[in-house]
Every structure is written in structure tokens, then in C-alpha cells.
Image 1 (cartoon, helix red, strand yellow):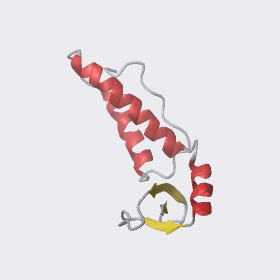
Image 2 (cartoon, rainbow, N blue to C red):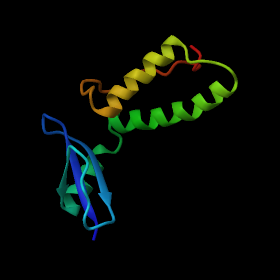
Image 3 (cartoon, one colour):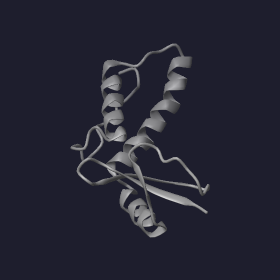
Image 4 (tube, rainbow, N blue to C red):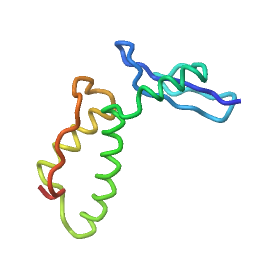
Length: 109
């Protein structure tokens, strides 16, 4: 049996949803069990959210960072600010931002 769960912010907004294929699961902190219908509704509401966009953008930065480091370069100050902003949005600690910051032209910027 699948276990469905949603994560809510302190203001009650849904900020995450996950499922597990096991019947008995210890839910991560902040998650509460929900019905399959609640999970589907939460997932639909989160798709395209700024938080999910930030998570996707961080994945791209991580991929590009490996190449940057392999070429002997380091992140520039603008890139560090960009990544910090994305991390705040992705973690849910920044709940004010409604669109992603502009990505620097190069990770060395």
C-alpha cells in the first residue's frame, strides 16, 4: 500500500508532497499523511511553482558546476548570490519571492 504525505509551511500553505511504496513509513519532519486525492491536488498545485523551479535550477547549476570545477574555475560572486537565493526558495525559507532571480551569464561571474 502506498503512503502519501504533504508538507505545509507555518502559514498552512502546501510546500511539498511525497509518496512511498511502503505501508509503514516514518514520515520526515514537517510531513503529514494524506489521501491519494489530497496528494494529487497538492502535486498539481505545486507543479510550476517557484519552489519547484528553484529546485530544477539548482539541479542545472550542480551539473554545470562539475564542468566549471573540472576546468579549474571557481564560482563568481554573482553566482554565489544566485545559488544562495535559489537555495532559500527551494528550502522554503524564502516564501516571499515569486520569480527566480536572473542566472549569471557564466558561473564564473
